[in-house]
Length: 108
Image (cartoon, rainbow, N blue to C red):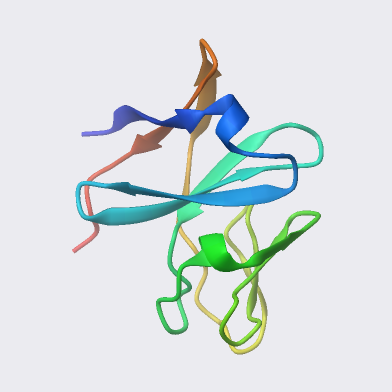
């Protein structure tokens, strides 16, 4: 069953930045776009499971710090080798200065 959880405060994420959020054994990445919107994806690169929060945000792209694979953090789409598996994305909302993400049950 989907569940909304508080990931961080709005002020915890700077514009064009990403932070790591761990919850219940899972790792997420929370992004703030140049348009001041928030997004959430799985927090590990699908190539070698490196934390994306250590990566570089450029417009709507997150670049993995290990092999420079790229994803569109708004859609989760893999955008540059060596990554070829998309990231899972999660609905995000902001309430009372908090960034909340909707997480579902684990796949598999």
